[in-house]
Length: 129
Image 1 (cartoon, helix red, strand yellow):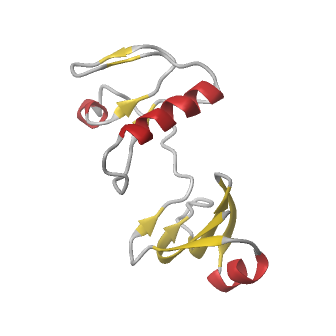
Image 2 (cartoon, rainbow, N blue to C red):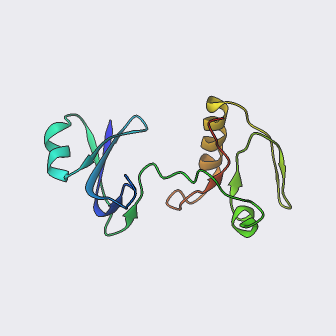
């Protein structure tokens, strides 16, 4: 199963300047294509879920790689945390998570816990090292 996103501003952030493409194809949690929609339709056979963004913006693969909690404390307090060390927040304590697989499990648990699946989920905390 694959998903084709189109119909909005798709910003890849490829290079030093924002790059816009017409469509993005995702399969198995990985982006497999970014470019003209007609090429995606013609070159990727198989069952495809088509998602019309209806003018909304998509930033595929966007990950905030570095943020300072002190300078954006209010931002972080409003979001969930998955980090290598325990975080004690006023409303919840988030356990420390080690390794990519455990990180992905923790992220999935947070996403699955949300009642409104159409809302964006911002999670702070993963770094490859």
